[in-house]
Image 1: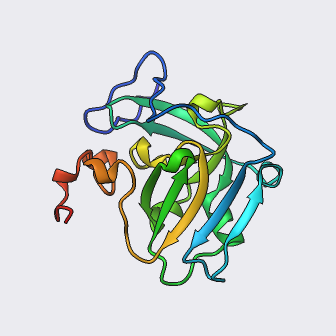
Image 2: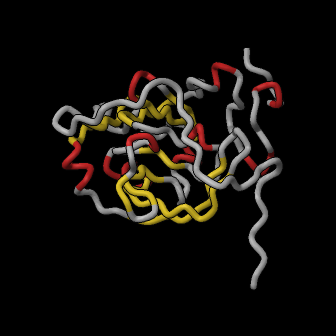
Length: 197
């Protein structure tokens, strides 16, 4: 039997998947729900999709470990959804866009570099392990950036904003690391080479 791949430093595998989030779990009302791509778009226009339109988009599968900054990791999670590269092809960013702000219900947000957003494993997930995402785990749509700590994998996504300069999201403004690479244990902003202003 082959040895399991190592986990990032400081991580462990729990018995169950803890449910962690800030604030209440939002209700999902399909008739009112939409997904928007806005900000520094190539066209200068906002693009909007209804839930039936998002649900009809081609689903792709990504299998990856999931690393929470609170030090637990879940191995081999099977995510299905719309690849971020597919979304960016449908609503392209402007040439000078460098970052993305992922917006969720209640104004929650997380920033990622454009290169992280467009990574092969990044997707807007609708399913996990063959089942539709539960609300408590971020359904109906969750950003998944598996190579970063999980606060960048925003639950309850409602908008993607292309940015021409970096801007900190909710947890980044509250002391979390701006990049969040689990292999480098980038948990907190005091670890950044250039501290925030």
